[in-house]
Amino acid sequence: MFTQDAVKQLSAYLNEPAWMLEFRLKAFEIYEQLPMPTIQDEAWRRTNIRRLKLDAIGPSVNGDAGQVAYPATLSTQLADVPAGGELVMVDGVVKSYRLSEEVAAQGVIFCDMSTAVAQHPELVQKYFMTTAVLPDEGKFAALHAAFWRGGTFIYVPKNVKVAAPLHTALWNAGGKTFTHTLVVLDTGAEAVFSDEYGSPKDANGQFLHNGAVELLVGDNASLTYASIQEFGDNMWQFSHERGRVGRDGKLDWILSIMGTGLIKAFQTSELDGAGSWARMSGLFFGDKRQHFDLDTQQNHNAPRTTSDLLYKGALKHQARSVWQGMIKALPGSQQIDGFQANRNLLLEDTARADSIPGLEIEADDVRCTHASTVGNLDPQEVFYLMSRGITREMAVRMVVQGFFDPVMQRIPFEGVRLRIADQISEKVGVWRSRL
Image (cartoon, rainbow, N blue to C red):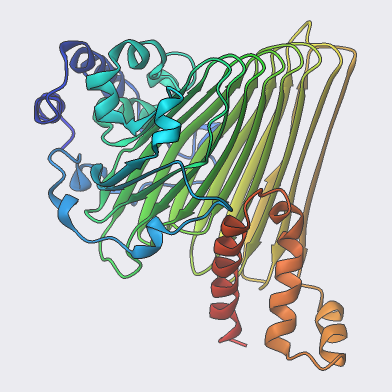
């Protein structure tokens, strides 16, 4: 059960300082005050979570499953060069950790969140859920703030270009994780970071992942962040994710979502400084009865800012996707360029995609556009490939891979592209067996 005593028990188990316990307790007060979202709420109108047995799942207090083995693929090299740091966690418990001497000598901090609380309290207090994701953003944001456990902390000092990519893998074996990712790049810093999530495919019962991602990019800094999610179909995933970009900063944000039974994610880029740039590239593939609800915002809070969003999804069986996008321009945010596009491919008539772009413009010197499409697999494309001697199964796979290619080309690492391509092929293969 999610109770105040459970909050205290978790904080005591992690041997946290008094200020973090106080933070958790305040967040729990917010959690108790906020109602559970329903389809009466606009943001949740197309996603019904009444079957979620939240209290039956309960918090992850002591990490009992921390000794469970995890797949070897979690530590597989994804970047084109050796990683400068690697962290593998199971249910919020560190299983393996490595930071190269070269990266450590640069003054880069790369560790799990609990270690950061203990060893770098001044940085955590300054940035943890204070400027990006806030505890009062919603019921699940408050629940996360009260019961977070595990996750990654990265701090890159001023003008430091991290010598090699960083990689974290988070495995949910015990049925409940509340991981937190906090990345802070100081002025002029540069980093590349990949964040991987997974859980068993054959597990029974309801699993829960309630996470948060905070990406803070300073003035003239540059962050490339790739999130790869492949949870089992019994997972309920709720996530609040926000990137903030300072003057002339750059955020290249890549998301791959293949797993979960249901996901509701709020993903926001905040362009806070003049000349800042953010690109959000997402792809998802749903089958069976998977339900993906992605709520994105591109907020232009300063002049001469640029945002570019491209999300592509394929669906089959009874899978459903909901994408709600919004580009906002505040008064005074002149000479901005905002673009968003959501493309959906339905492989079977039983699948459904709702695509809802939006603009909220309060400035008069802007270029903001959006695009949205939902279409079926083109039988002529499949027939054309078959007429060249290609089997129907391979033709379908080629068409689907080609559909995702514009997003795949935005991914800077071949290892990440190959991992996602394998996941797409596996999804297509399940559908192929039903032809």
